[in-house]
Image (spheres, helix red, strand yellow):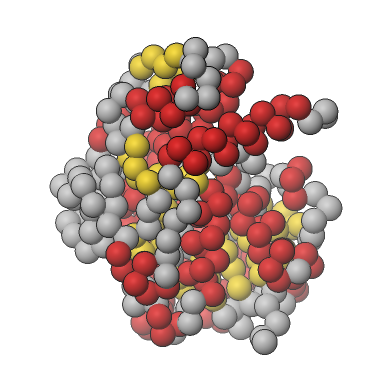
Length: 320
Ligand code: NAD
Ligand code: SER
């Protein structure tokens, strides 16, 4: 087997922490280099190499790729939907230039594979709301969605023109307990569990019936690794695959929490994120991911809620 040396960019973020730990389990601690602009997440400490790195600094990135003998890059550094609307220039610059820097370096060096996530945010108000297909009308209205859609075409372009093996999926909202989310519209579905345990109440920034596509983090990590390990000839989509695990509304997640915490109360105070959520589909058709590389989720809402609450309770009992 080819010896791989992996660089994870944005390793201190919500996905980066868990993906880095999963990759270290598979490839060995020293073969997965974590990197981020901010300091190392405490959960990564002592588990493998870490370098401080700004993906916008192409020269520095290039030096690290050569110095560490990198053969695969997972690019997770980005500005998400809600933060992006507060600073559109920053979101566009990081989300585009970061990707182009990585794709360019891949062409010059021996990079076997690149992973870059897109998002359900590529879809806009004119896309189908229910079971939104892989190929359909796509007219995003957030800067985040625009940057992800443009990024998908850059991935396709580098694959077709330069043969770069870059793979991507459109993550739905991701829910996790290990590391904090980074400024997305779907973050309510994480905050709600913390507040339910700490305060027994939560004020939601989306309306009760706002359905969105979602996925539990263990499923997202599994999907990512499955996509990256699939034989290249199975990858028929070189823009980005639709994937989904479940779809629910704030009211439904609150009801599932009440099964465990009967006196939990939810109230609603929609803010600017409601318009972002309203522009996205409620559910996603991911048939092609299932056919091409065998995607299948494990968790539904009920199972995720039980697991989230169990793990957050365990964490709160661990002494500092
Ligand atoms: P996050 O904000 O939690 O993490 C991003 C990390 O990138 C942070 O640790 C940040 O410090 C780092 N970073 C920012 N600028 C950097 C730079 N210039 N150089 C190096 N590192 C930098 O984000 P996340 O939720 O882990 O998302 C990872 C990827 O997955 C992003 O591309 C995001 O768009 C995509 N995605 C996430 C979700 C979700 O629900 N979390 C859904 C769809 C797509
Ligand atoms: N969870 C992400 C967001 O809300 C979707 O890409 O921004």
